[in-house]
Image 1 (spheres, rainbow, N blue to C red):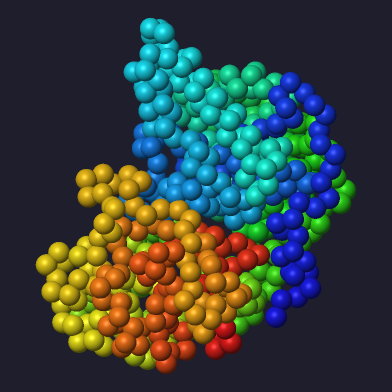
Image 2: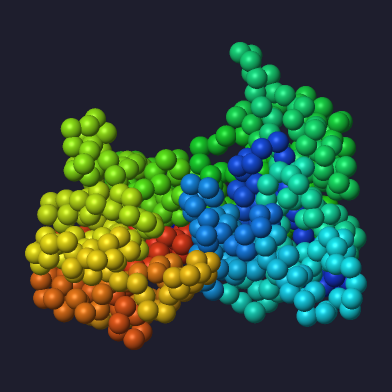
Length: 579
């Protein structure tokens, strides 16, 4: 059961309560910008820092939006390998974007669009297209001013786009600059942001730089030189950071803050420690306790509200996360298990669900190919099956390509035959359907045409409107409606009695409509279909405690305060609790 404090958090998180009086009108329409850059190395925590700063600003009652700048030449993240870039996060409008936008949506409870992920590919494509149309009137098109102007124009336009479900313009835009300062790819964006501070007025923008303070040696000496060099590079580009967020395993010592202040030209009160904490929800609280909100408000002339119920409830959430009791083990049968970022939203959705049930989550990673009969006799095969058999529940997430498919099918078969709670997502639905066709209907060789074009029983087929020649943005993407076919199903209960469900999609293949009648006659229930009744969206199993799979990706809309219904159902079923 949820305690009273968390219930209040659930109610207040989305509500824009205790909003202060709007800022006085000024030449830039009151918009304030917080730019988060990084130094020394990538993956240092800029995304979490940007999201946490956004939470602090939202706790004051301001409307907050976010932009992620990615300096790669790809137009979007859609064609990138999960091994190369982590998961591809999908937005309501079908945008395939960087996983940090998932952090923004989860922390700030907002809905972003594809434009909130600004890439070099998008910028250059736009400028080149305009040049071809003659929009530059014969001028020589250059990085400065044409590329930098395009970047600034996009930032300003995107920042003014509502993202909280209302029609009101945001008050504050948090901008995360991807990569590290000094990268050749980032140079046009750094220059654009240098110019941007004069366009919007220095009083309306602040720069927050995240850097590493490594701890060296037996005595644990905190080294400032990496941060000094990083800030020096940023200043050489014409940007003076207003704040430093120093990542370290231990709290930054006061004498280290003094040294950083002296060499990096910032006040000591503007140097914040971002040390390791017990859970990610403590990061906003850690910054708050060091005076980050006060200092940022002072810098941007923002009202510092004394009533901040959202921050109080966020603190309660962080505390609750540290007080979980009991365990639940979920076997994650995937093909990118060597890199957890490949399944980041899935992990978050599981964590949100475990938090709602008050238990500790343990994910047992299982490489799907290790389960296959071709690996019988090997140590990895034995250990992988031990994890599956010992798990409280089994999860098969999405993916592409034929590697590990037979292992996933075996995992689905084990869950079905042994009444183990099962959740399949996207590919997880497709392989569950293939397994059922093979082993219940007796259709030997049943498969997806993605893996076997000559299968005698094409159970999963390529969608007719898909493209086989262009990969980027050609899938079925974004928020689509699923209609439940009956109230007598787990989906109806999980979605609180809703008959129409809005969830995000990302797939090229679908269950063959011609096989649906035979599959249903044998006990596979397609309880959710698209608005035309042609695409199968949700399957459940007759005479099984919880066998649930979705063609859509419910993990993308999970929130700390509102766990994804299918994932919540898996955790409940794995604990033996009523759904």
